[in-house]
Amino acid sequence: MSTKYFALLTNIGAAKLAKATALGMQVEITQMAVGDGNDALPTPDPAQTALAREIRRAPLNVLTVDPLNTSQIIAEQVIPEDVGGWWIREIGLFDKDGDMVAIANCAETYKPQLQEGSGRVQVIRVILIVSSTQAVTLKIDPDVVLATRQYVDSKIIEVKGYVDDKLTEHAQSRNHPDATLTDKGFVQLSSATGSTDETKAATPKAVKAAMDNANKKQPGNENLTALSSLAGQPDKLPYFTNKGAMSLAEFAAFMRTMLSKTDAGSVLE
Image 1: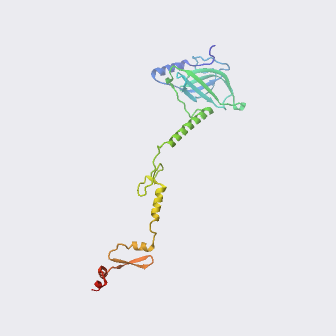
Image 2: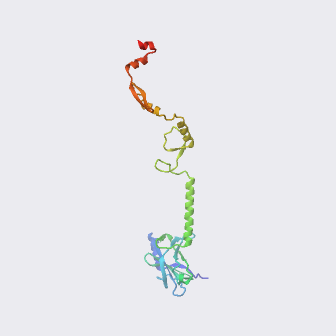
Image 3: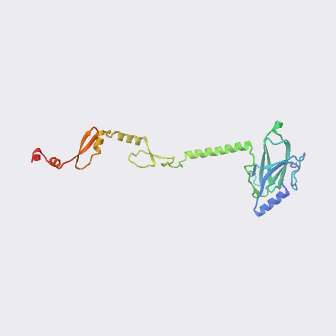
């Protein structure tokens, strides 16, 4: 039984592909058109330069090498649910110059409009055998194409899985920045109580030791505070002038002499 539905390069497409292969260049396929075959199922003819009756032309959504056969390229176009009202029987692929480089027919399918009560998103796919996939530019402009819900959902799952894996990997790793005086980050704990290191954080043990040491110190006293400010003054004698207030008196020479004596008798001499 002969094949009823198929795709092939047009004469123009075959010539461009051969030239691109020979010169190390590429053919840039950019658009797909669909037609109704002029109300009949057409048989693709490589001599064609246009569809029998083109209905719609738009940028491709997908253009990639078939992962199951590297000598084939897959071209896809998404027709949104608000477009339709006609039959699809023929498909054409066009390059950036506007030349039809490939043509295909397909099983007759009606693309309804929303106002007909049965709108749907439809994906048109063409699988094309070429002599060299390296000679075809596999590039899509994401700003001018639509994506199917299935494609978006699959990509969301794919991206979410990737992000979850990376977050888990990051959380379980030790590859994190160290904290500084200005930036957050990992910090090492230390129980040292006599260190001046500013790159470590004190443990509760170190904090308790510091608090215990502080609690052992003599409580503040206003008299001692007043006295401490006068300590060390040469030839001066401190005395209280008020509570918590002290002053200094001159330490006379005879007082120094008296204090140097060992008994009262020697003081009177």
